[in-house]
Image (cartoon, rainbow, N blue to C red):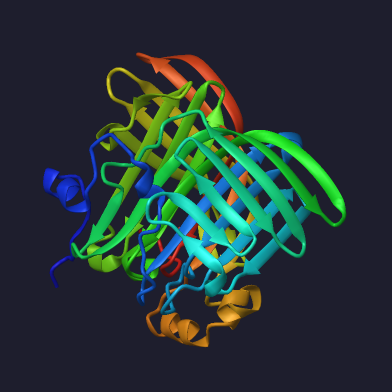
Length: 364
């Protein structure tokens, strides 16, 4: 059977068709792209590494990531973690109490909001457990890998826009009667698509980190078997907000130290290495996992409230021999810079990254 086509849209025709400009991100790109049709999904995502070892993750979803609904079904997820300390809340909001702009990032879910202009963002979460206000100020310009649209059979797609590759964070969070103030480094991206990711992707690793003066965004996406397990390597290297390199032709990716997670029943790699060498810049970025801070799995209803609420989805993924799952990890990110064969700089910092695994547990 002929392999289906999977590619990153990057031709001049692609840019024209999508209304995008090469090397330039415009505010409307961070606005609403979906219309609530079956199969669509969209979310605005934020994460931060905060002082005193805390990690913060917030997501505003217009439809479930599993794309198993018609119309908008807005929700917000909030997770503040440090080791065994976890403050978490999921807020579901009636669609009639929500508004989302197509002109820019202006997302209002009831009393909560996610708003910004590609440089400065305000995120407010008004939950029953948590009240949070976050300010994110970009230290680097918005970026996307080419058009940011990954095409599957041309008409199906997944889009990714790192609106703020790295920025400064100020946050005030009230939970359980206690108010805490934080500073740190943060990230915001925006995703949308028109086909359930589990039909076209087998798995991905994604991560980002601020390491000394450097900022890194990295990802390695593997398409599903009908698409020949096509690989999409992605890497952005910045120094003090200035781009040093992002051409995937010069990237070598390796993964090592496999481990098994009993919750998701998937293998993952505790060490990921992105070696980028374009003749001008040679850096090696290594992610070394220390702990898993969040899980999600559809097929195991005991560990997923979303799966319990979607019997149809659970039946579909089992019939299709799919097993969507997710783990978010924290650990140490090490950046090594080379001149010739000599390492001339080495810095490390805490990082946050994830494995999204839609297929069965298999080596591809």
